[in-house]
Each structure stands twice: as C-alpha cells, then as structure tokens.
Image (cartoon, rainbow, N blue to C red; front, side, top):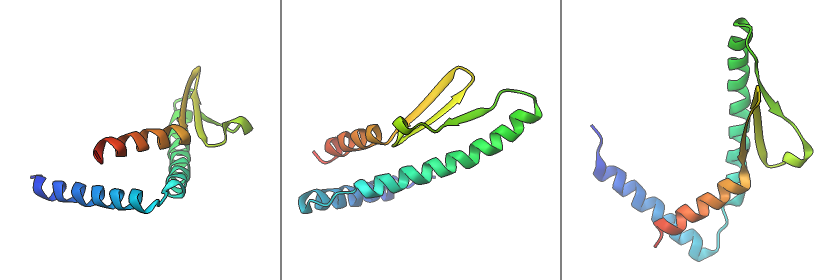
Length: 103
C-alpha cells in the first residue's frame, strides 16, 4: 500500500531544495545534460536488444540518426516514423513544471 504521507514529505523536501536552489541562483543545467546523455546511452542499449529481436523476425530495425544538426537531440527512426527527444525542450518543460510547483 502506498504511504501518501511519505510521498507528500518527499515532494515537500524536493520543493524546498528547488526553492533554495532558485534563491541561491544554483543552475542544474549540467545535471540535466548528464541525465540526458545517460538516457541516450540506455536507449541505445535497449535499441540494440530490440533490433536483435526484430532481425530474428525479419522485420525493419530501429535506427538512430547521427546528424551534426541534431546535437542535443536523440533521434530514432522506425520505417517512416521519426521520434525525437530534445534536451532544450526537456529543460523548458522542467522549468515550467518547477515554476508551477514552487508557486
């Protein structure tokens, strides 16, 4: 069973830390970049596993696009479908989320 009191306390602690960071002028951009890089590595590992299964079934594979203009983005394609994760968009969403929570 979920302990909602414990979850509320964790959220309160996170909010307090975020408020302190904002007041102190601490930027967490490097943290976001490091997390984004880890996600790209993890996604690459999972894509390799998925592609192994797709090849066994003689299906199209998931490809990662490495283009210079896509720095800061993770771009994957599967057939004619394209999926993009953009670090700048993640930062923008995170800032908006923090602003709404810290009000």
